[in-house]
Image (cartoon, rainbow, N blue to C red; front, side):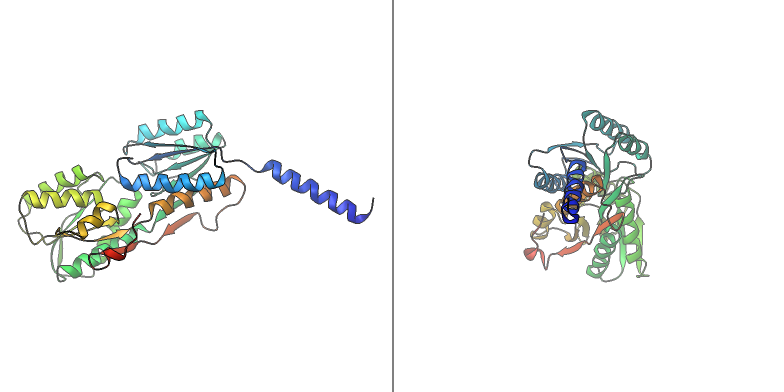
Length: 306
């Protein structure tokens, strides 16, 4: 056999081995905060589209953890038992979820954190949450004239929430005439939670100029509370860029701006990065952050949305 023939035979063997060793994406499990939140539905949609691009026959199973660590750990165990290849997790508890993540990895499953950080995962895909909080709160201050009483309406103690609050505080710290009345109440990333917390605030504080909520569902609930108690002179900003927030900014409501995320983009990037890791291609950076875009009453009509 000639040298050329030997070379071609060797290359064929290498290609055959590589093709044989490539892992298929047959099944994905997603455990997310709440599928009642349009944000997570958009994330599932983005993940599903990318997964079907890789394998049209892929099975995608998305479930709600409702921010319950025990429930989420059981969901991950169920994914392992069902033989998924890839898990996307929006961690209910970034640290405590690590043991469940390690069980999945021990079973040969790649685990990607989405939206929030999680211990022990193979990679993380999230919004730059600190920047989201900062640009939303900086805009809030500009709308209330650089001074006044402000509330930071927090949420579950996930990394994304904590980073948004941190970014907001960084922005507010540049204004000595801003007073933060409260920053520790959990609006539960829901309309009902936001409304309940805001009703409490409105009862406690007679003089409020601005409110920053860590997510749009809470902002919508807070607006309902403001309307219910007939309070005026209170402006609101938030994070997400959701359809409800867009509608509110186009209407006569206190909502002035929302730092928009790209949940579908988070979903498809997480799937692609996870699939690459499954096949030995690690991302350049362990954490991928997508920049937020500030959507305001002035530019909302040019915003494409989720």
